[in-house]
Image (tube, rainbow, N blue to C red; front, side, top):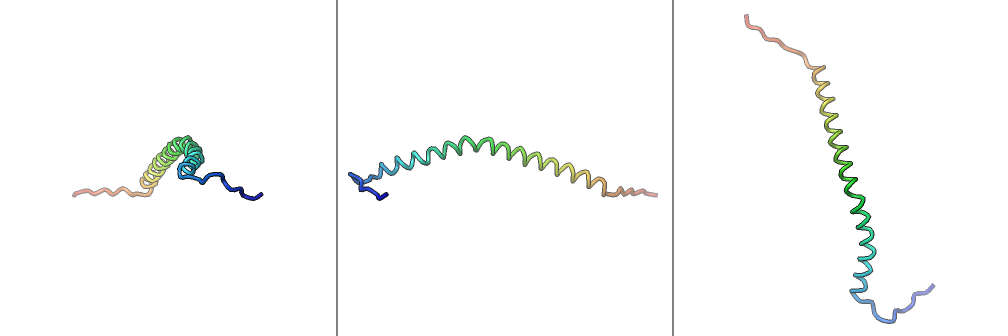
Length: 72
């Protein structure tokens, strides 16, 4: 399978058109896939932060001692 010579030289417009075809398809795929991933990641991070906060609060309450100061 040898390469054949093109009948006319390849122009800049030909290259740009070919790149847009190839990159346009992948950009559409990424744009369709990206929003659900971003939303899902944001929800997961937010939920994890709330759970960690609540567990830390609970542990702090269990391990802290109550000090009572009375004046005589």
